[in-house]
Length: 349
Image (cartoon, rainbow, N blue to C red):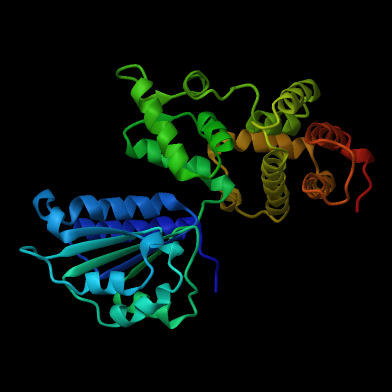
């Protein structure tokens, strides 16, 4: 079975949200996974939109997983009929704290149509091989909310910003993704603050806006380091590396290596596709950055790229404590960068 992806999460989220907006309700929803953003968005939409405010005091209940000693607390609540309303809503938050959630299967096999039971199962997933999961799938909806891959975050940021009626420079989106990581709730929080401080009537977010309002340097970030290495700009790369070594908490070595690995992996595929005269659109590279990849492809041939990827794997292991060496992350990064620029002298492993 193919692994569930962030793209699948977005598709399923949009389908469920569309049904909810059209008042197509299921008796049971399980919202589970590592990416809490979509879990919160759907549970909040249900909490704020299914029942009018006048009906919520009697017909909307929030239960926390840590308070559930016996599963009957949920099942008995779910079997109650709504008071002077068409539906009652029960939201179970932090359901991953419930020790035997599968005991809800008895209720879910024959759920009350007038109850909308929402189970928020954060940070974990329910075993898809169990009859409990299959019963939920048969009688309700399941959202598996997984984190986006690092290389998909900048696209997600651009899409979200456009949905809010704004636009962003591609470089600014990459810098944001590099700095904020894959936590969508954190990203949205920073973006929403940014929207409020933009000058009136200006809808385009620039790298300067990012630097002034979020505190991310336009000159010292992983994106600029990758760019300098791709262009073989030794002095610029060394300046950035020096900045990173002085601020290790802001620039974790493992994330820097992961970004470089992603870039050189795409370069490897680019060389291969061009060698076979294949369409390069499958790489998913934003056309705005294609010229940078062309430059990098001229600066690093196929054998050099293979060597660099091997170096990145080696230093990723070192950064995690394997093959212990007496060097901190700053020293490892300086050594790695030097070897990349002198890759012709590195033996092919």
